[in-house]
Image 1 (cartoon, rainbow, N blue to C red):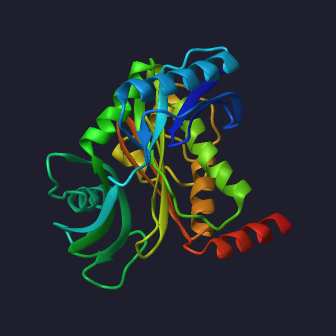
Image 2: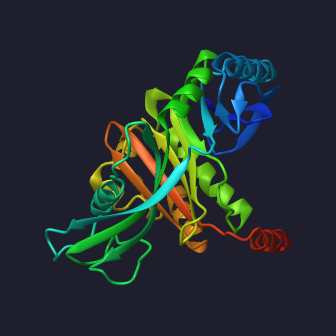
Length: 325
């Protein structure tokens, strides 16, 4: 039986600090192991204004969660909020040298890197870069350019930034409580209309794969970022590991049914080759997409992007229909 991967998350709010610990099994099943809550102190509108008080509040919540789950919390996902969080759209353009070949996943990664480059003051840092759309040869927007032909590829991204001082203060308080900050998740994600069971299965599958193929690093990072004010409204979930990685040839086929990467086969890692195809089908059924960026020996990052909704009543109606099926 494989070892379960433990994940912790910390939410530092203006009224309370909440910590939750859970784990993920071989098949993607999750369970909550412990919760800790403490009154907030040293914060104003989600931003730390007293390091000592905030650190003590976080330490109390972490200690309660550790007592509840019976283990030490060494790293955690931490939510970031506050008026210092801002966002903007940016566009990038690349040339496709050989027009006779289709646009590849590597081309998509290059244009996203170009679109993610912005000039920001030294007192701010980029937290997330969220793809918003692609254009081939300046034509109508497409959801995914891979496989298309053209000599020019444009991309637009939604870039979220935060104040360096606020992020460092929050990280210092969390780390002073003995917890390493692995990533940050922005608050106020847009709502997603869809089948809760299917979407949960897709995300659990990505997390399960990160655990399975994470190798000796035993490290994964899960993130979520939304674009509530842009058009289209989107939510992107990312799952990252520092494991085997996927080479370029395997990346071309990784979402095909029953396909298994050569490295996974050579290491005799159990699997059916259906999980990622299922994730892709779920994403497309919801009008979204799934993509992977990977380098052999350094790990992989899977991004599940889904359309969001601005109107809470629309989301509630969709959820009611999903439950009624």
